[in-house]
Image (tube, rainbow, N blue to C red; front, top):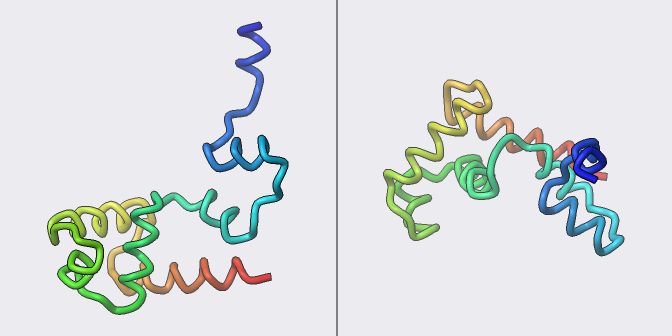
Length: 100
């Protein structure tokens, strides 16, 4: 039994729920599932793309500016970017690729 389970591919939480419900995932959720960013990082990336400063993002999400700084740094590292402008361009590209 353990060998059979070990051979099964791992599903993300969203994939498992979708499979259990028998629902086809939307294009947007498929793009999100393939994203290297966490849901919170994607939320912050979207706000960066809207041109908000870290302080404004912190006020919008009711978190500390230092937390936003950390998320932005993590995003830059994960995506291999060096600037917020690159994050904004990435968000635009992700949005465009999720259109039908």
